[in-house]
Amino acid sequence: MVFLGPPGAGKGTMAVRVADAASIPHISTGDIFRFNIKNQTDLGKKVKAILDSGELVPDTVTIELVQDRLQKDDARSGFILDGFPRTIPQADALGKMVTLDRVINFELSDEEVVKRLSGRRVHPGSGRTYHVLFSPPRVEGKDDETGEPLVQRDDDKEEAIINRLKVYREQTQPLIDYYRSRGMLVDLDSSPAPDSVYAALADLLALNRA
Ligand code: AP5
Image (spheres, rainbow, N blue to C red):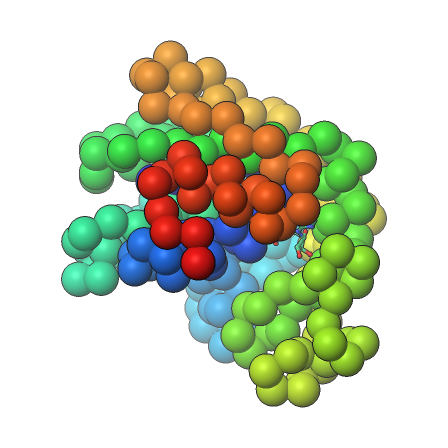
């Protein structure tokens, strides 16, 4: 399945829980790019400025990366794609790679997006995500598991957030109609608190809520 929606809508937060409950991998193209940036690979060096500004990585690069990832053994019995596809060419390419069950459309207003992204803090080692108000760590600024410092993503600064919303509207939002017209889209109100959003999603996907 695919998790579609604006930046900060909670796709990553829910993907971690659903992947765990359904025992399928959570494949986030954003996480893959950030991993490469952190490890200063050739791909990381190529995409760092693009991610920092909130623009999209070129389709050719992203499609090849997803194609390779979906061929791994762990994706054979299902997967959650979080942040891919983001353009019509990416969706067309994905349609040639796999048959999708569902596309979940996470709905959230721009105002809430800005609140969520500006308060987000992440643990760089694990990708664990917190929010200073909505899901704070037990000790301010520290990861619950390791006690290591939390950081703010470079693209969670105000200027990049505004650009990410613009890019989302222009290039990704058309995918809502693309998948709706194919009968694959399910809308999900992602404005309630995380546990309520997860409960709605678990019902939708017939998952165990634990
Ligand atoms: P990516 O990492 O995919 O970023 P994104 O789509 O902008 O999504 P986010 O990770 O910002 O948000 P999310 O919806 O996962 O929200 P989260 O769960 O963290 O992509 C980054 C960049 O990589 C792109 O800009 C682009 O450059 C590049 N890229 C990636 N994929 C690409 C592609 N396919 N093609 C081209 N380029 C690509 O939640 C946000 C915050 O809200 C957190 O603090 C969380 O704790 C909190 N929160 C979550 N749910 C709730 C809730 N229900 N109530 C209150 N708070 C909540």
